[in-house]
Length: 222
Image 1 (cartoon, rainbow, N blue to C red):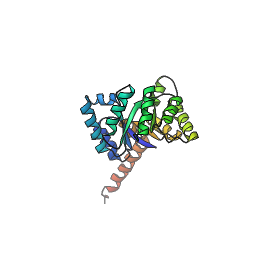
Image 2 (image 1 turned 30 degrees about the vertical axis):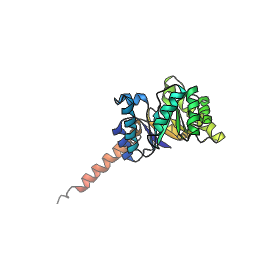
Image 3 (image 1 turned 90 degrees about the horizontal axis):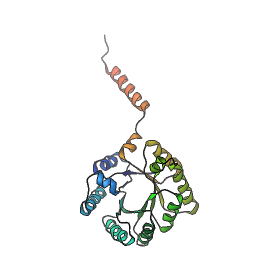
Image 4 (image 1 turned 180 degrees about the horizontal axis):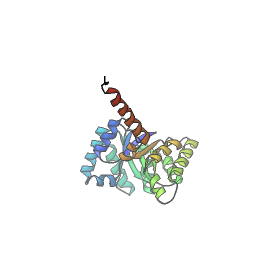
């Protein structure tokens, strides 16, 4: 399973890259705004900076909701770098745009997926990725992970090459569960990814090793 980081924060992206575990980045207008990045030129420049750090795919989301505007904006994003994947919302115009981009060889990520039907339509239109939102479904007492498993099964049944990108991942167990049900990719904030490193027995074990080393290094009393 590929690890993407869900952020527009360059420091977090660099840290994940330095850990040697980063396969890509997902962003959206909310994440850009969180970093204080506004205005088209600044946003485009920021995407270029991300592309200079990361070798894998970077999802860059269109702001437009109308087909013609999505096409114009998506083509501008795709021209920034070969690793840019145009992120398109799950709407009727979005599906039309995905079909267009697919025919032009521009890769896409269909976002805001909340049902298997939506994922299936996006895959049929030629989406490179579909992004089901696990955490947001959990928030309304719906099993987000069951949706990931359902989409994986459907895509496997019919040989779709569209990758299942689990989004809105909130905690380490979400990551493990995504791996268990066969998600191709998961995207999460750096804090969630780093939480996989932690275990109290690791901490206590390391503390004991260090304490024993200190004892062994003490001079022997004559």
